[in-house]
View (cartoon, protein in one colour):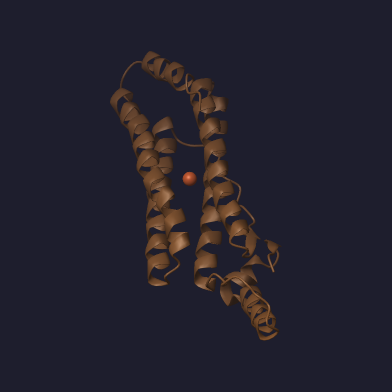
Length: 203
Ligand SMILES: [Fe+2]
């Protein structure tokens, strides 16, 4: 009943939900034969969670792209910080992946767009990062609202963790961006000092 779907048919599923509908038919057949089956998660909820999986993967890729930019600028502390953050985003993606597996529903493995690796400035890169986090926050809030309207309460409970996490994420990126705004007209030594600070991140 559970499928992991590659991106070649992902688009079709996103628009038609055909594979998920097929699951429902298979379930109905099993029920008609007197078999016991778990309730199926509704297609809209499955699609939203798959969308979140893609967003978390996109986040990891975005931060790897920004990390590459900093590494090429010789700002290894920033590069280190962003690489660690890319790993954290992969962990988020795996949380969604494992939840979908546990619920026995289809997982769509999406094609990811290549991220940018060049930016006008450190401020430009971190502005993009903070904007992205604000977008992720709104996405998970919409997902939670959907879970409540569909009465998919286990999905709702799962998504709450991400809503709380996003408060931390926005705060983290905003604090770096504020420091960059603060030093933007200062001596480059200030940027080097911040780079050393960024390089101390452990998790
Ligand atoms: Fe995330």
